[in-house]
Image (cartoon, rainbow, N blue to C red; front, side, top):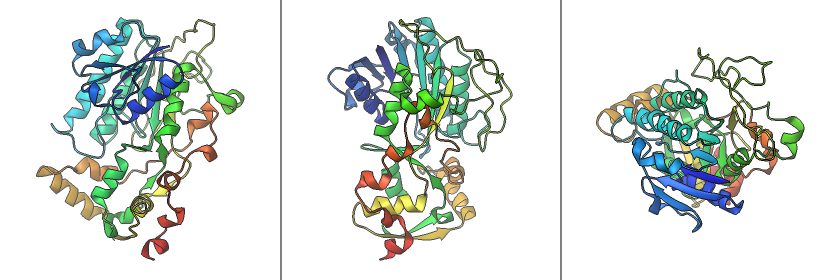
Length: 362
């Protein structure tokens, strides 16, 4: 297949491009600075900005599938303010949808985020939710992924953790009780590649893909309906109905079972942010004890810092109150067993007991 990866030089994009090349696909990576990515030599590098339609439109010509990965970080307040989330996530997605429709792209795979919703209370999640709406209302075959937090070589979570938490003794809002379900990037990108190829694996063939959480009000008995109603923690029920999805068959007459699905995926275990902090510093042989800070105080502090130009702001304070976990891990739609996934401690090469307070103080 001929696949265009929009945002292909970034953390997720470079890993996905590598996976697709290894599977024998023809791959192009589109980004503002394509020369910066660590990409295989086989990948065609294209320059374009998703917020400028004319700069990306030609790249969609002749593609069998397009993956849209472009995103700003939810961990930091973007340069230009929160409106940038809507310019990049919503406007950029609308441009990708328009170009894909214009050039008859067969399948659009969109990376969103856990808790994304048009009614979310942060600019990042709200813009991601509105971007999902743009994809679902398009005439394209689509698949949407909502991963939790991804880690791996070049990730953001470890650098963010070291920014906000010091070794040995560190204050954390709410004692770091926010729940995480970290997922290794090399466990995640094969799922996106499988969605492009229409693969489900052994478990997926037995259980089907109906375990995937679907979004928006729809007719449960109508196989042509794009998605079922989804209510996220902060989003609530959405009022609009998804458009019907016309699922195309491939050259062999097979229907891709991932079309019209929204997949919420995460790693093999749930940990508190305090545990993530301890493991992160344990990888450098630096034990860490946590001092709880009241959430109300953290809200005020981050809001004040954001108002004077700091990298964190009120949206980041709100994010600290959201557990980044899935209610049902949709990896089973791809035949993946959670026990086969890599844990954060395994990736770091540290003893999992280092996550516990008693070991941290030892």
